[in-house]
Amino acid sequence: MSTKVHQLVDGNGLPLVTVITPGQAGDSPMLIPMLEQLRVARDIGRPRTRPDVVRGDKAYSSRAIRSHLRGRGIKAVIPEPRDQQGHRKRRGSRGGRPVGLDAEDYRNRNVIERRFCHTKQWRGLATRYDKHAVTYRAAVLIHAAISWIRTLAA
Image (cartoon, rainbow, N blue to C red; front, top):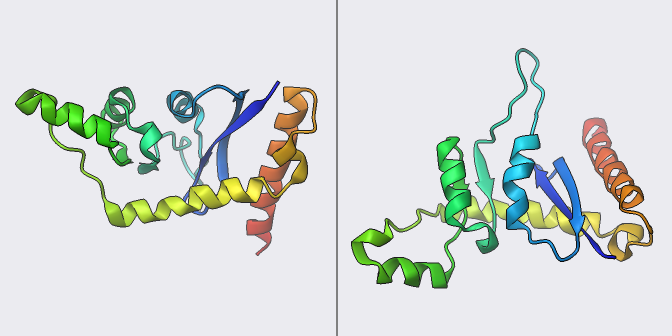
């Protein structure tokens, strides 16, 4: 059975939330459950549960995700796929406004891609030698902990 790693990362590419799902599971349905798990500790007060910005590729462009982010006051930097643009234009004034994409901010999405490439440098994670999802998740979390330790030591 194949598995898939889903991660929320901060602006430096350090993992904040990690979820393991079956390999055939899509990426976008996991975004909202991962945002609900997000807890970032502060020096004083309750942990932060709301990021300033969510950057994602076109797979995350859905009405449900955009409305969820808008309802929580989170800026969405997610491009709109061509088919969604066509559907919106076909509906005319009922189709809604075009998606505002901050192209300059979207360039920072490479941080996410670099995190996935960095994770796949571990041969055991890239080829998934582990038989059980629990063992695989443990390896992903160890990799995340090492990433955090390296940045704290630097």
